[in-house]
Amino acid sequence: MKTSEKEKIARKNILRKGRSIDGISIKGYDFDKGVDYGEIIKSFSSTGFQASLLDRAIEITNKMIENKAFIYLGYTSNMVSSGLRDIFRYLVKNKKINLVVTTAGGIEEDIIKCMGDFVLGEFNASGSVLRKKGINRIGNVFISNSRYVEFESFFQKLLEELYQEQKKTGKVITASELVWKLGEKIGDERSICYWAWKNKIKIFCPAITDGALGDNIWFFKYKHPDFILDLAEDIKQMNDSVFGLKKSGAILLGSGVVKHQILNANMFRNGLDYAVYINNSQEFDGSDAGALPEEAISWGKITPKAENVKVFGDATILFPLLVAESFAKH
Image (spheres, one colour):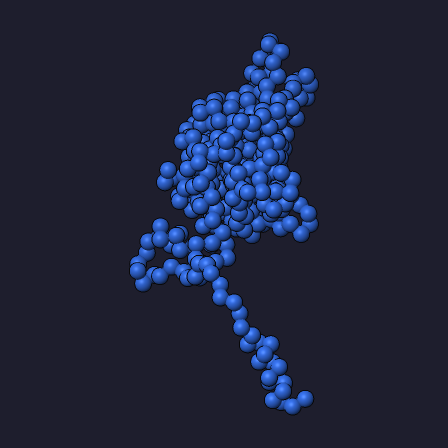
């Protein structure tokens, strides 16, 4: 084949005409105009990639608020280990959300932080060295094991009170009532659980027997084998919460049981009207953790017409920006 013929074929394949595209032109923030953080966040809408998805998450969250949706907030325990705990406390204190689902660490570490600070460390710290020093590591957050000793003393006394009440009245306490009791007893305004108790906002913890909470319940059961914690009533209340809602929305930070518990409950009303996911999980292995909103739609956990988005990224960076541009402005 002659060179001219090859060139003609190549040009035809490469330089084919494309259709015109309507939409938002891609452009970023212009720092020649100075530094304006509000405008920087607004510029995410035209930046592309995850920035534009975060902008969409902010937009959907504002619609939840404006349309008075019942808002479910789900977060995993590591987020309470981080400084996001203070943002969750703000949302619960100011009644910005209606119901919370978290894991055991999301409860116990909220209470433990009232007993002493967690400290910034390093991801690459030697595990064996930390173990010798009695320091526990969550990512680059360090916690002295003494905090858990203090928590055990506090929690065992509370369990004894609840047990005596159970023997006296025959009433079995639910896990969510236990969370309120922890908040009431700690009596600390820095605590999420305290404000949940104060404002009567339910915090459901389907994995309450995990972590230090589970360890302490296990220790307590050796002394009192007849102590009972009611999880069945909690799932009834959780699922019942979806009925009669005009609009239902969820903000899901992280994944696992927290994400699924909220999605599964909303399946009984034929799905959420708004859904915002923030996590880094992938769906290639069929996990619910990594599943995109489209999978939840197939189950009836999100309505087909719902406004939804998944943002891939670190919630410690993204969630404060989302709150700043939504809940904090309302």
